[in-house]
Amino acid sequence: MTGLQASGDTGVIVVAAGRGTRMGTVESKQYLLLDGKPIFIHTLEVFRCHPWISQIVLVTGKQDVDRCRSWIAEYGIGEQIQVIPGGAERQDSVRQGLLHLSTPWVLVHDGVRPFVTSEQITACCEAVRTHGAAVLAVPVKDTIKQADAQGFVAATPDRRSLWAIQTPQAFRRTDLLAAHDRAVEEGFVGTDDAMLVERLGIPVKLVEGAYDNIKITTPEDLDYAEFVRRKRRLRD
Image (cartoon, rainbow, N blue to C red; front, side, top):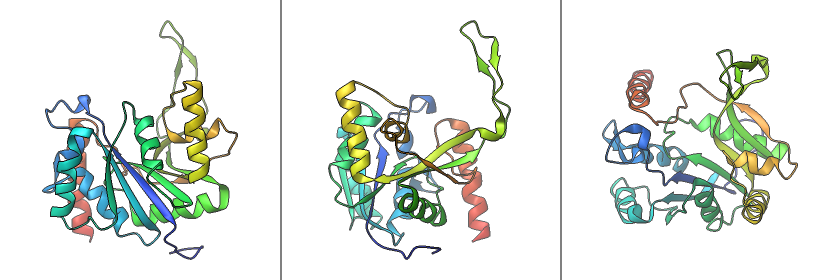
């Protein structure tokens, strides 16, 4: 651990309620096997082993709650993990997860990002305590073009100011709950939780992550995930 002393006052919401139509499989992407285990199990194992984490809520589809509990029991990681049904949208699922946590700090993480590391989790935990909100991110490698309505280039933003946002994202639990409550009241749907917190005027700190902390969404992602898994196994 670096900086602040580790403590168990952080909860994590792992969101695994999506159907994943871009994967092109009958099975939802979070339940596909990676190195013999469902992807979401790999994700849960990282957080379960982290000393900062005292509560874990897995949010999944209502129809998948029982089988997720069975998988968690099969892999022997069920002691601190609650499994609950999510809502119609990802944002609804995160809000449901928040209602099942009591820790002062909360992380939100995609269930299909199994390659997050303990060091990255620690960095987010430290940053949120210093800055109030933090997100894992990586600098954009490619030149980005902004398009107009007709499909022509409208602008070329400075690449040095652009970051691709990952998870986990870290917040004070009360701030994130207030942000979600306001979004419900105003009928606002954001693309991530940081966007909701930003609407409260809370600055969000960028914490540099790694390019292999991928979100497994397409068949190509699954192929790359197998490569990352093999590479890490050889390294370890």
